[in-house]
Image 1 (cartoon, helix red, strand yellow):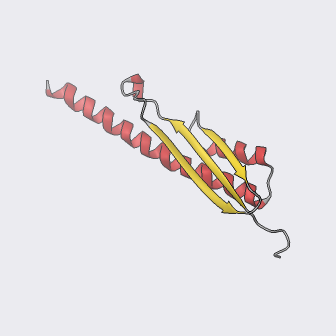
Image 2 (cartoon, helix red, strand yellow):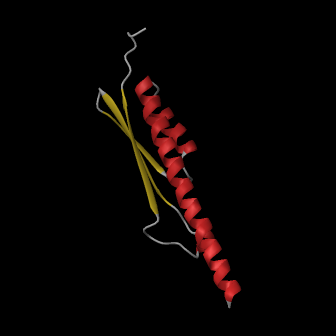
Image 3 (cartoon, one colour):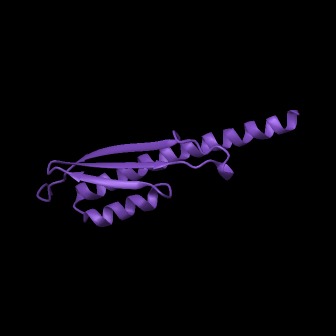
Length: 105
């Protein structure tokens, strides 16, 4: 009886680690996307770059207001083998970058 409980706890801890890793990757993707658009890269190319960095199945969106760029990454983490497939296992990250001027050099 102890072994199945130990296995369940181990699977749960691995899943929590996967949730944490997805959050870190989402933060990196949001930063990368916002930085690329603020630098002057095309929005589509920046979003594609962010989707490569973000966990699979994430949605990356960009809002450029002229003076600053806001990138948002949202997604959901599926449990290992569908055992811990909880609806509240979501992650999100947001990054803001100031638009760079080309005349500053």
